[in-house]
Image 1 (cartoon, helix red, strand yellow):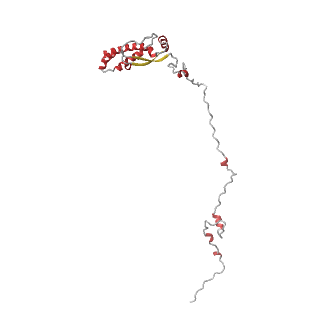
Image 2 (cartoon, one colour):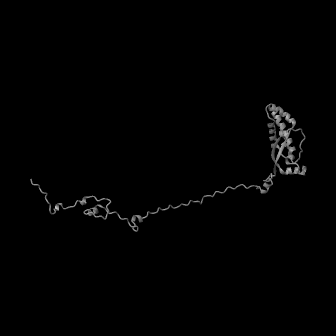
Image 3 (tube, helix red, strand yellow):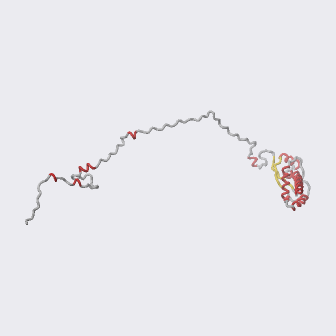
Length: 231
């Protein structure tokens, strides 16, 4: 059997004259200047041109148009025609200021009131101590009785210009007596010292010791009598 020969095609047929390369995908990493036959036209159709940036010198209506600035509200000034300005409180004037000289010399009367702080001392008589011993047996303390009498005497004491010497009496030690202080008129103290103590040896408490002690003894007798009647 004779073998059939392969037919030989000669010439071109317009029906089959086309290229399949335009349907092939173009690689992404292929440079743009590489021209693939049959693909250049198709690529030009698929790719869309990128928008070009607008020049800086060209301004649009939106950028040039500025929003109107808000109008500031008119400031209304308050009516102060009928308002009264409060007057400042006046500080009371000091009658007399303390000077540096008064402080430096340790004055007892820097304000010039004419009084001096004076110590008052009074002892307890032995006879009065015996009477208070009876009250101590009833629960009262001698120290409290002396304090009560001393407070009464201090409130009632008024310095007299007449000097009274220290009275003679049998006394307990001053440790068991009464001690306090009170402001007394300085001019009276100075007059008493000028008359009784021209050399300035005695102190102000010594000038008033006789007056205050007599008053204290009177008040102590009064307190002892009241406590005996009560207890």
